[in-house]
Image (cartoon, rainbow, N blue to C red):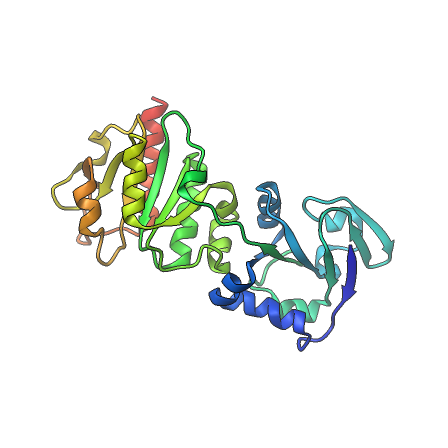
Length: 280
């Protein structure tokens, strides 16, 4: 492992770190994304992702083995304020606190930022349980919503999240932050609606679309077998291809004057109804 110290925001490695945080095109072209925070990086490493470069602020991460606690690696202190994690990390870059706060995406982090190699998977890579529970999101736009859905999917032990015709980048720092690392704990695939429908049908997974029109109460719908919960955007809902492909249409009671919930809230309600039915 190489160790460097960088103190200037004009350093090319710092500029590239910021570029990866801000531009999906850069993440795609370089095959890298950015993970910030100890908990998120722990989930990332546990999922088998490979860190290319680790940026550490000793003042925030801690100058001792107990204080540093770098995920996925043993530590030793070489001198006051300097430490070396052992493990498969090619490059460790130490940066001072003032510079770290300029490049950190979040205000309250543990002084750890990593550039990680992307690993995109497809539908055929998914390993499903006997009675799979899958979340399908069509044309999700806001990274925060997708991140929140991933947290619920993790809590409900969903088999996968399938994002159809996405309008956001799976490796967006906002998404990783909102998911609290759920992007690494729940297998997540991007594909087209047509491919997703064919894949679900080939595996006998029932397609339940969340919609207001021509629908039944969600708690009256059987979710004990293989189930795909299909959610659309808050503004326009699902497109016709999903409405036509559905085995059943379901809805959540809305007792107020508004006719929609945040997609992440709706997804959580439906996921835990499936959990309730399966553990009743």
